[in-house]
Image 1: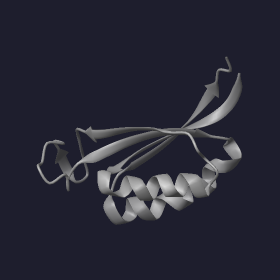
Image 2: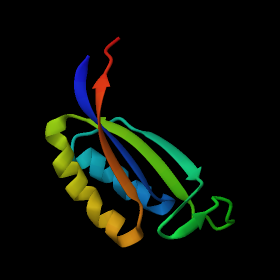
Image 3: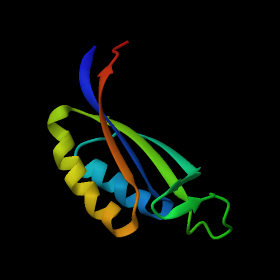
Image 4: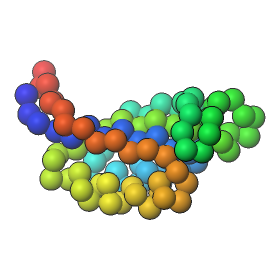
Length: 97
């Protein structure tokens, strides 16, 4: 096992293309994306069933080396400030198989 940082980002679905671009610019190529997540936050309830898709959120999970996390968070922060959302960073362990 080796220590890594687990990064979870929830924001407007239309912003996820930009978030993924940020990951690639930071040298992070792997992620899991879940579309149409439902929840309640600072912008109120997001139901995920609006026909236009404008108010839908997505959830992105990725990992990075501890040395990469500050630059990644700094690059994602402007997207979250503009559109709202959440970025969570936690310590984790990569189980090699």
